Image (cartoon, rainbow, N blue to C red; front, side, top):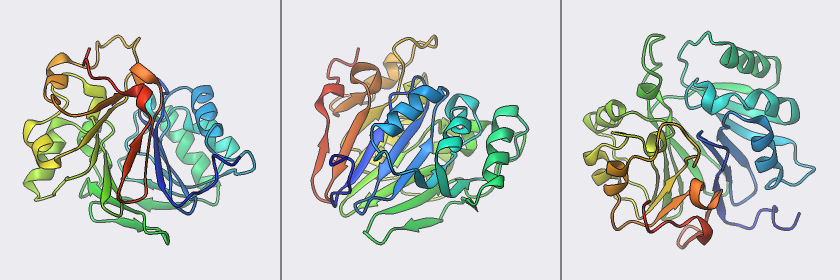
Length: 267
C-alpha cells in the first residue's frame, strides 16, 4: 500500500503483457491513466493490481489508441473490476466483436466519452499534462489501424514521454508534414520495433534520451527487427522482453528507470 500511494512524482509503467500495448500512468497526486491493455485479462489485471492500492477501483482515464484486439481485448474483463472516469477514442468505426463489447460496456457505465483529436489536452491539478498529437480527425472505417493510432505526449516539468502504440510509418510522416513537433525525453518504439516501424526523420525530430520497447520474447513475427534496433545505437534501450515491466518515474527534472530491463546488447 505504501508503494502505491502518490509520492509527488509522475510514474509510467510499460506493462509486460505480451506482444501488446499497455501503459499505466500515475500522476503526482495519484490519478491513474491506462492506455490500451493488451490481449490477456489475467496478465493485465495482475499488472494493474500490483500497482494500484487494493481499495482503489477507479481508473480516471482510459485511452483506446486503436481498435486492434491484440491491444485491447483484456479491457472487457478490466471494465468488470474497475470504474472508468472518462475514455478517449478517436472515433474510427469498428464492428469487430471485441471492440463492440468494450464500447457497449463503456456506454452502459458512467464513463464520459471523449473523441480525441490532435490538439486535445488533459491537464491535471498536479501539473501533469497529456497532449494528443495524432490523429487530426476520426480515421475512416476503411483506414489502416496503424495510420490513425492515438499518439500521446505526457509531460511533467521538463520531462516528457511519447506514447506511440502501433503508429505506422505513414502516420509518422503525416505528423511531420502537419508541422507536429514530437520531441520527447522518453520514446516508446512503435509497433514493437517491427520492420520499418520507425521513420528516420521522425526519430530525429523526437530527439529521445531514453527508448522503451514493448515486445514478447515468444512472438512469431521476429520482433524487434535488427534494422530498427540499429537506428537506436547509442540510446539507452529498455525492453519488456528482457526484464519485464519497464517502470519510469520523474519529479519533473530527474528521470529514474528500473535497471533490470536495460538492454545494451540490442540482441
